[in-house]
Structures are given as structure tokens and as C-alpha cells.
Image (cartoon, rainbow, N blue to C red; front, side, top):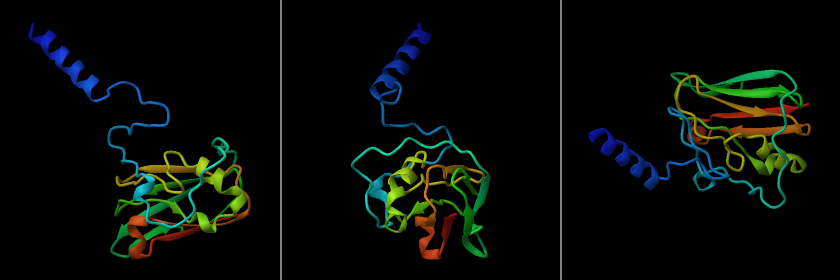
Length: 171
């Protein structure tokens, strides 16, 4: 009887909290994963990417480039801060220390003809921003497939006051 009551209580609680599958257009973070930020949390100015639907995320077809996100006694930084890549490569941003960190592109400075594809290539991102990443070894990946050559500046919004900036050049 107690088991039945407990099971019924858990099921009622799940139903009240929306314990079903996520609805289309939403996601659930895995246990231990950082919470996603919404566009309203954004502090980096830039145009909102709206209107026509972006292409789906393009598959990775090139090299994998790892960028460490670090905050320590030497300061906050991306290592390397300058990335040279080709369309089809993937950039993996990995938290080493000093989180939370974020990868936020200044969409005003991204080549206009590729803004929508950049945003489409950002898993769990919101209008040019990655989710906040806090836990050491937490990783966020960005496909560069479908992006045009150009310079793509980015920052860690929570660490911008400490000068955490980077630049991606696609050749």
C-alpha cells in the first residue's frame, strides 16, 4: 500500500511539473549540465537573427580545434585566443577553470551572408551565444561548415570585464 501511494505521489508530481517529454523547440539539460541562457540574458549587442529559417546545422567535415576557457591567477582567457580554421572544421570550447564562461559572437561583425548559418551551427545556443559553461571539462562544440571566409570575433560575456576575448578567422 505504501509503495502504491509513493508511486502515485511521484507520478502526480511529475505530471504537475510537466514531467513528460520536452515540447518541440525546448530542451532539457542533462544532469550536471549548465543551464542555458535566454536571449534576454544577453549583454553583447548585435542584431537578432530572425526572419527566414536558417539552414540546419551543417555536419563537421574537417579538423577539430580545441580552445580552452581558463580563469586563473594569470587572468581570464581563451587559449588560443586567435583561431585559424577552414569551413568544415569544428571548434571545441572546453572549460578548464574559472567558470562560468560563454562563447558569444558579435553578430554585427560576422559576415552578413553567413550569420544565420553561424546561429544554426550553435547547438543549444541563443542568437549568437552558447549556453553558460561552468564545470571543468564541460565542452561546447561549434561546426564551421557552411560558413563563409571572414573574421568572427567572440567573447565570454560573463568575463568580458576581465578581457576574455577571441577571434576566429575562417580562410
